[in-house]
Length: 204
Image 1 (spheres, one colour):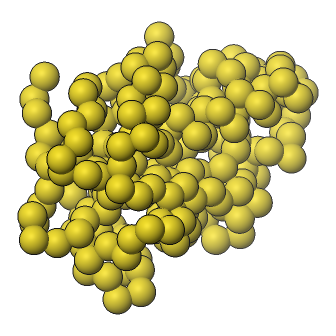
Image 2 (tube, rainbow, N blue to C red):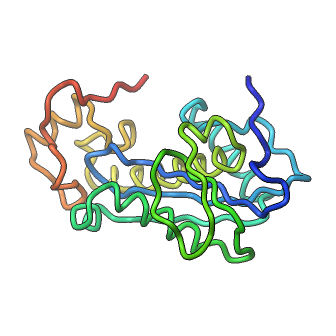
């Protein structure tokens, strides 16, 4: 496993930011912001997509216990429909940064190639940054596990959509349920809920 970089600039207090759920048909988009302690090593830290659910939950506990600071930002499906998913992703990251209670970052490391500046804090956009920087990887894990919990709870109310497994992403079973039962108040009505098969997400 390639080791991730602990920082971009060791002279600055950095927060890594990432989001989860951007491509889903239902539920919120969730972002994490994490300021890691350089003196505390979190074993197994990596891009959340490269980890299984059990590993993510174990590492999440380590992040919550050992990070200097962290925040979670949530933007609902209603808000996504109002402002579009790109702006919703930016808003979720802004809310996550606002959720940092102990620190004010001097530099933001953003996963991806676009970001709307947050206040006057300098930022760097890094494509596939969750596989490069530790703080972004930690943020991706917090975002992913938080969102999975939300979708797991929503599954109890709407079990026919299989959200405990697909997490709201466009799978054949999810699309078939929308076709049969219609959309719920948790669906993103601005999305193509019954789009073509090229949009389908496959889960192992």
